[in-house]
Amino acid sequence: MTFLKFSIISLLGLFSICCQASSPEVYLEQKLSPMIQLINKESASSKKNMDPLVNKLTEMILPIVDSNGISKSVTGKYWSNAGAGMQEKFSKKFVRLIVRSFIAYITAGEGVSAKYRPVADSSQKLVTVTSQVKFKTGEKWRVEYLLSKSDDDWLIEDITLDGLSLVTSYREQFRPILEEKGFNGLYELVSKVAQ
Image 1 (tube, rainbow, N blue to C red):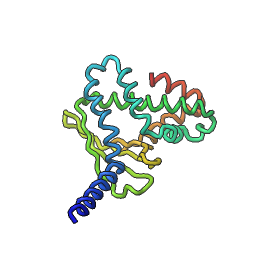
Image 2: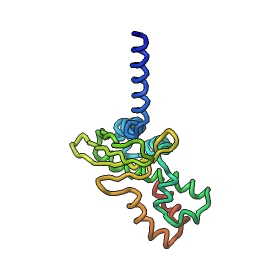
Image 3: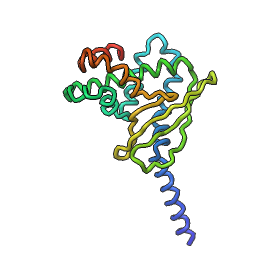
Image 4: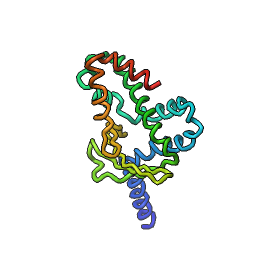
């Protein structure tokens, strides 16, 4: 009887660990915490040359971001005008641009930490994970991550910082460039700024 109880308790414990590991907020925290640690460790030494830090963070974040989905959202109808090769190149450069922009904000505050709040219903295919980013200075930001379920993992579809959507913001910035210079013109600009 003792063995049966132990087995049941062990299975329940294993089940709860598996469920917890697949929850979007735990997944996000597991993926973003090493990035925050890297930023805290290297931001002071990287102030003059951010490229090595941007390169490392871009490599770390690319697997957890729906880079094609975000890129398609910010470029709208112009996305379908670009070939698959150009779409892929744009997506990578765009994610690098996002990383570079966020590093500029985050390193200004130094000493970053984040807390992630549980999602009400993690069985949904699309969820929002709310977090609070806190700086050593005491400043706090509310950051929301829109995540979609992809196989066993979650992918970031959008990030909202204190009510401002990354996708909406870039879409508004890119619209006049796309209208004037097309997708290739936007790619050239994003490539230049993302360097």
